[in-house]
Image (tube, rainbow, N blue to C red; front, side, top):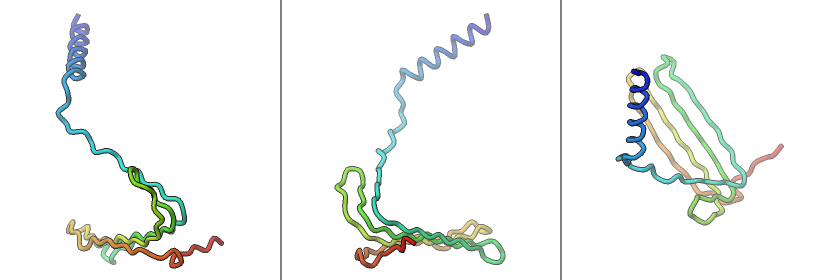
Length: 113
C-alpha cells in the first residue's frame, strides 16, 4: 500500500511539472556557420618554468565561402588570432587578446603536398 501511495504521489508531481509552464527563459536560437574552402590552424601552448603561467595561442587562416545562418554567403579570406596568458597559481588572467585581418585571396596559400 505504501509503495502504491508513493507511486501515485510521484505520478501526480510529474503531472504538475508537465502542466505548469516553466518560468525559465528559452535559450537563444543557435547560429550555424558553414565554411567551404581552405583553412589552416596552428595552436601553441607553453608554460613558465615554475608551471604557473600558461601562454596559449590559436591562429587560423581561411580562404573560401562562409555562410552564417540567416545571412547570404560571402567570399572571405581572413587571418585571426587568440592569445591568452593565465597564471594558475594566482588564478589571474594576465592577457586575453583577439584580432583579425582581412586578406587578399592571393595572400593566403596552402601547399597541398
